Image (cartoon, rainbow over all chains, first blue to last red; front, side, top):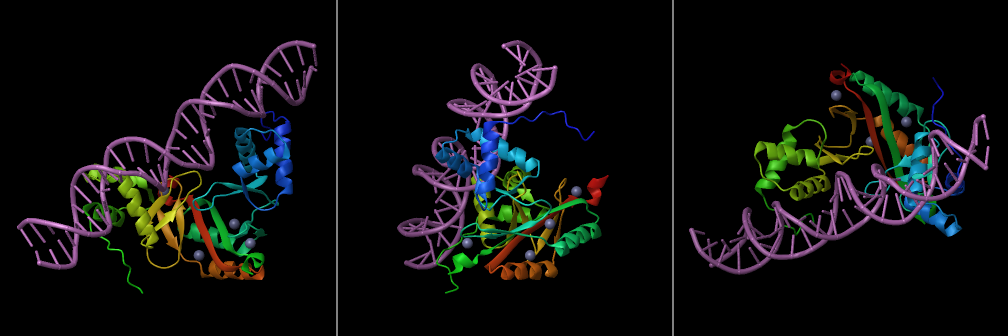
Length: 132
Length: 132
DNA sequence: TGCGTTTTTGACAATCATTCTCATTGTCGC
DNA sequence: GCGACAATGAGAATGATTGTCAAAAACGCA
Ligand SMILES: [Zn+2]
Ligand SMILES: [Zn+2]
Ligand SMILES: [Zn+2]
Ligand SMILES: [Zn+2]
């Protein structure tokens, strides 16, 4: 039952988006990525960029961040559960792991009888380069 | 300089929204609250509900949550820094404090040279009533 | 209580990221 | 190469939120 019936196909567009995500650093919006592809000469529809990013996110291959009052931002991250320390000014991002936080969240939720627990956590600040 | 030049006026609509927020439990969207007011017989425009909520949020009197893929949710909370344990099904909310998390976030940010640090943290789960 | 000034309201239009539609195109197992 | 079917993309649709602006309401003051 681990097999999915869906046949995913390789396309030029999907490769282009993946390649771009592998090169850029930090979080970027779908529109940003679409513009970058256009500048590169890659012809990919905006709808396809959205769909591809959504697919990659569902597959856990990229992370999505929803900054207050802005568009969704996407970034190729390392595997496994982690959180982000993001610079408010330039977007520079550090992945951080917090085992203590994980267990704390789980414990607090259980204490109140909540099950099927998940959480969201982001840390914002101004990075060294932007402090100067 | 603590005085603000702006003269805030008391209106029926503002009172209605405030009163409603004081009664309901959990987080609710602007549209939800607008509908509730309508059901109560209170006549308040949707635009005004949005504006009032925004004002209360800016004043720190209510908390705003932005759940993945949904509208903004508002809730009258207690004072001081805290986080939320929210039921995905019914919205029932428990305010939680995590001193450990606070210091952890601060420490991690400093270690990477980030300053002016803040964070967002929400815990989601299914509450006892909704576990059925 | 009546006035004038200033804020507030609210019906409606506008915005804008994201999603939907669907005819056309591209993949890929055979 | 063929054919079934996933993928694409231009444009329309969606939907929460914000902007507009004339009319209504508050309130300091007389
Ligand atoms: Zn920076
Ligand atoms: Zn975590
Ligand atoms: Zn519940
Ligand atoms: Zn905190």
